[in-house]
Length: 178
Image 1 (cartoon, rainbow, N blue to C red):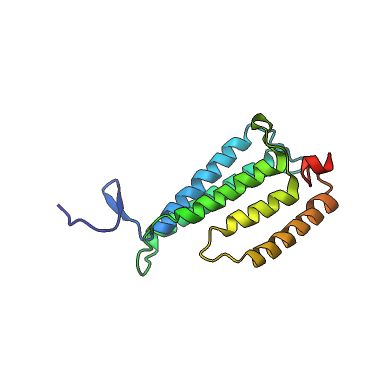
Image 2: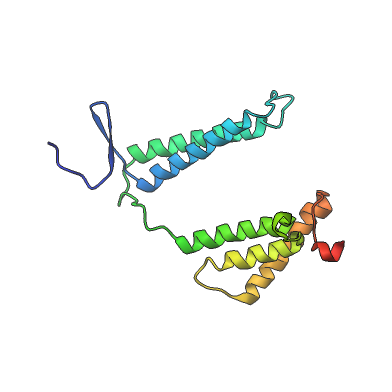
């Protein structure tokens, strides 16, 4: 029986395949999974052709490219030796929680949640909430700099999405704008 290795490995036929970089291997698997899911989901829309692209064309191409990138990263993780093997560390639960909470809060504040009585608060309030909640993910919190960042992001988003692109969505809370 061969000696046990600390590195994870997979048997491929009679050949032993060592994972040289765990981080890259699992990141590649994630890219392949997300890319495949996007490509598969895009097939429910009209794909069209290169000259007359349908709504599913861009997500399909993007999903395929993401899956190919994941395949390359996964292959590289099994063939290229790294110094320490790039072990996967502990999960960073605090940043994960605050980043996800910030995005959910932004979505709810932007359009509201009428089923539970939350009114639409609009883009500006949503961006301030997003910025303040996501800034709690870090080790340091400076309210003044977060406020400046939120103001710049809110102004830039208003200019880009409302003024330049003329997108129609609530900018201010519904009780202010009517």
